[in-house]
Length: 71
Image (cartoon, rainbow, N blue to C red; front, side, top):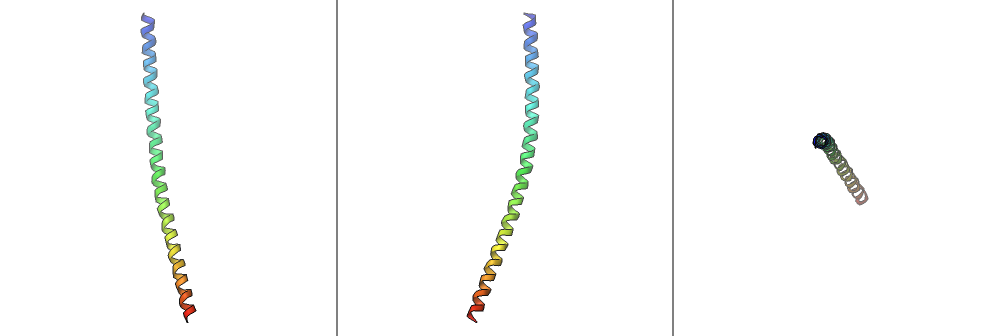
């Protein structure tokens, strides 16, 4: 019986260590994902702003062409 209790204790310690390792891994991955997500969001905002500026420039150019045609 004593050997079995020792085995159970070792198994418990092993599982506890694995749980701690997994928790640390999940924490690290979560931090990385949060950083990447924030980075991607700011990158997308910049891309959207650039696209809006390009569209506005195109609209202005079209307006200039219409004005020139009228003259």
